[in-house]
Length: 356
Image (cartoon, rainbow, N blue to C red; front, side, top):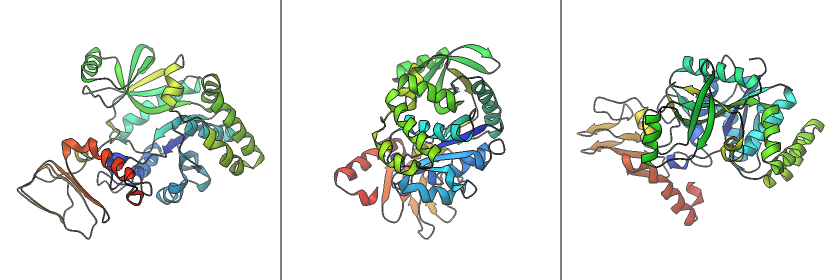
């Protein structure tokens, strides 16, 4: 894997994890499960030893660049790419591809979100080897997670025939379904959750961008030329904000031909809500995910996150999420945690960007 580079996408905020996740300290820079590691540090650590830090490229925003560098001390500073502004995942991946190709003409990219969890590292490594091998041969490859429930919060990938051991054709990408459709997909057995993890050579994805998103490719060409002449910073400032804001799924993957899918089952979670963080956290005898010095009386199935110097006491409650950051406090029922984004929207409308 000497020519394989990890590309870590770390530009999101994770508004469903407000108030802990903010623009200054987004989800990927938090320890949401009590593991002692930030999400992004765990992502980079998972890739070792196959992809060492010197071949890890992180794409983040200007506001979080320094915090990402601090969270990843072993990743060279020049590998932390800071976008002037967020333009979604297609420009993010395209810019990273320019840097990979600049370093290695036949470089392979393993594109990973910075804020997902994987329970079984050995199974992850085995699947990655299959995907990288297929990508080296010129294919666009993705991980499809074998579903264990009719989940309506994920997109799906319909898979076809196996083209080699552990690698299948990807017939089509499907948007997030309703519950009835999700049940059909689960019963069919050949629909996988779209993990958002991709593998391809830099040359291949840039070629595909040229076919399907020529405006994006034209902008990337300008950035690539500036990178080669040592003037990337100035050109990036002018060009990047003009790039089309589009996801890699919608802009490229959904319409590309010959995509391959590696079905995986390595204990994956996109950790998309406080309820998911609760499920993956260590719990006490009453199924509470709380710190050792918290007090819980006749309370169960609660999640508490608070500063170390603040004692939290629970009495006669259950199924609550309680998150105290010192400047903001969230209290909600665990089954209502998807509505936390509405708090963020309300604060935006009120101009309370100091809390975001």
